[in-house]
Image (cartoon, rainbow, N blue to C red):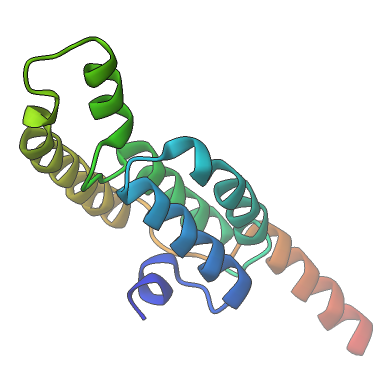
Length: 130
């Protein structure tokens, strides 16, 4: 329900790919999120509010809220850090802030409007039905 409102789409396949992408990113496994992200981006380009939906998806991917930054913890462990997990709280705070700010700015500056592709398609269909 939140994804439907945030991305302004009812495309179940796109929402499923978005959910998988964001879930994997939450766990800090960014490489595994890429296939879902590509599929979601392609599907969002075909939705009614394509520009807005794609922009919101990009912002959420770029800011990438992470609960467990597993990649960084693994890197710190491999470099024999004294406490490789001490970055979890700062990472959670900074990624939460950047995600909230990104979503707020996207909502403020990009108003959902129908994509040019769909407007053109509806215009052509309107001419053909007359």
